[in-house]
Image 1 (cartoon, rainbow, N blue to C red):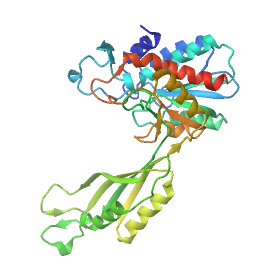
Image 2: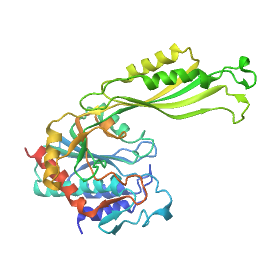
Image 3: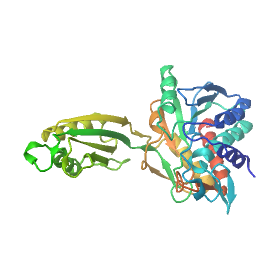
Image 4: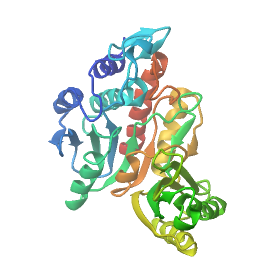
Length: 375
């Protein structure tokens, strides 16, 4: 049994339901301190985080990840207990196996192997670990990045261990993510009896033409790295529950997943223009997460070559999927990519990774270190 597998099992056994860490970070730190890492615990609110660094010179390569996991769902629907890591038919089962405790384990053992072979390596190695990625993500990576930025610290390269692989491990690297711009729109009308339409203003009817305009709008055409920006309604609520009452307001939750061909300000301005064109009485609140992109360069080439060596696969670059902590890290790092195990079972019952894929993941991270810090 490999030390990466052993460590992954130890991490999985800890019930770190977001935002709890349940001792995962202490375990990781206990492996880093003997290697000469300076450990900085960065607790914000009820969230445990740490930043570790070995070395004081550049370039600085940072591994970023999270120890928290999503809820298990109904435990009786799992093949094996979710926090009792179990190997069955060549698969390691357990909550967090794919997202992303195996990657965290591989970070540690890759660094251990690299430092053992190259104790006087040039440059620096870092880890940025949070337990607030699967939840609201307000007291984790974003706060650490703000603190590091305030003191002038920047990374040269960052690898986020998210499960990015699609059909086989190594087939996909995320070199960026779309931005997310969410809106909570409340359109106001006049409530009243449904039998007296001249005395009411139905906000659902009033907003319908504006919705059609937004559905029909081409927000942008995308670019070489991103598909076109999309706009979707996720929730729409209005009414009292009675069948004879016109509601006084309707609440609509919508979201843009947008490319770097658009900006937060431009999208907001266009939404306001459509709503105002239809003379609506409304309130609108926003939530924003920025996009990021890492063009081909040293980091993409180094990890692509490492993946080819370890998995025999030539990875493609992709910006698909949801948001990740890479969007925060990009504020202090020009080259950020995400690479990790298969994503087929993440957040599902019976989450798992193939045991045979674990050591090559560790070796991929180790070889990337060699290519970037020994060049």
